[in-house]
Amino acid sequence: MIRRVLKWLLGIVLVLLAIPVLAVAAVLVLANTDPGRHLIENQTASLTGGMVRIEGLQGRFPDRLRVARIEVSDAKGPYVSIAGLVLDWSPLQLLHRTARVETLQAAELDVSRMPESSSAKGTGKTTSTSYSLPVAVDLQQLRIERAQISAPVAGVPAVLALTGSAQIRSLQDGTVKLDAQRLDSAGSYALAGTLTPDRVNASVNAAEPAKGLISSIAHLPDLGPISVKAALDGPKDAVGTKLAIGAGPLTASADGTVDTVHAGADLAIKAQAPAMTPAPGVGWQSVLIDAHVQGTAAAPIANGIVRIEGLSASGARIGALEANAHGTAQRVDLDAVIRDLHVPAPDPDLFAAAPITLNASAVLDAADRPVKFRLEHPLMHLEGSGHAAGEPSVQAHLSLPDLHPLAAAASTDLEGKAELDLGGRMQGDITNTTISGLVSVTGGKAPVPALIGPDGHIELAASVHGQDITVSNLTLNGKALN
Image 1 (cartoon, rainbow, N blue to C red):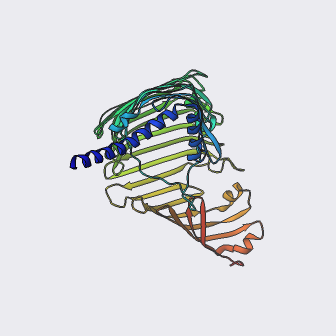
Image 2 (cartoon, rainbow, N blue to C red):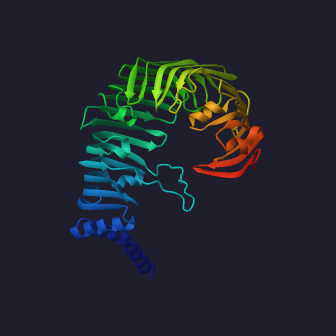
Image 3 (cartoon, rainbow, N blue to C red):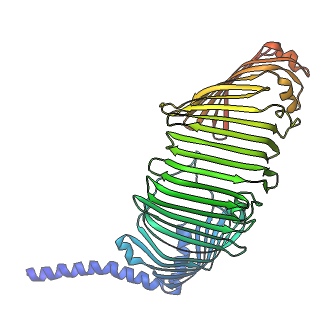
């Protein structure tokens, strides 16, 4: 009797075990028939809400897949399409928590635009979450014969051939290699890197002719031929760093170490260029940058100079700009002067008669990082102080001894002066600002002098949150206006 019961129970267990095996076998058989493939195509669109559509599913399911076309969409429509997809991979390796892909290949990849950002419902804020790999990734061969990148994505259309591989065990441990060759023009780009929990090793090499992909993305199409060589190697707290950039006659370099653990660096940075016009309306007569940066972001040490002669951009022109930074772990000072400034205004020479000087200092070894600054020109004097740490804040006094030339630059006839106290404080993503002080209008086009007079006062309080500005108080008291 006991033997019969055990045989009966064993039969039930075998049947129960056979059910999922038979179900998987049935799915595999169905998925390798034309009706089954059509069902997968339809269900993919249905389950993703139309976000992913596949056509022409062929090959052996699930490990040797061939797809004629894949299209990815968002609310605005398709933004990525893939043609001639080949995917050879090992599903059983998922049992070992590894996504092993022998070949990922596509005849064509078309990226027409970036996807729409997803926002939290009712807030307009982009959602962000931390991310970790659910499984390790072993991609042995990546090959895309023709990747077409449109202008909305890269700033300029480009057609590339891509090859690569990746072995990624986690976001802190892996190896990646990617090579790109431009097909619609000359240009080659190569990235190789290995990251372990305690070391970094990476290299970047790029070379392209004039009017290439990099200069177009930078909106500087006339930079000339560009070459980029970068190498990183070493422990994460002292990664040896070498960077060399050539852009036409412009050269730039960085040499030293970077501390990725404590957000620090010890780098010598240099750049120089003769007279250039890298884009219409943008140019300079000469550029020189020679600086040495040490320490961490919390306690930087910077010493160096920046000299630019004959800079022009966006309709403005500067005869000369010179800045000198010098500091220690306790304090950093900046002195800068701008000479012969011309602005795109009805009176472009408004500030050209005298130099603009800036002096600023910051105490780095204090918890709240106090800063002081002074900006001077015969038409204005701005002096203030603040704190760069915690909730950053600033208080300043702005003196405008003669309103007439400033008003004329705005095509307004006004005479007088102003003495204003300015304040600002950042609290999270909200910036609160205040303005208060004297506005004296002693002449100019009616009726403003009669309304404001020589003893007008203004008070303004507002907050800025993203693109929203909220005015909580605006008070103006004048001779005949309140």
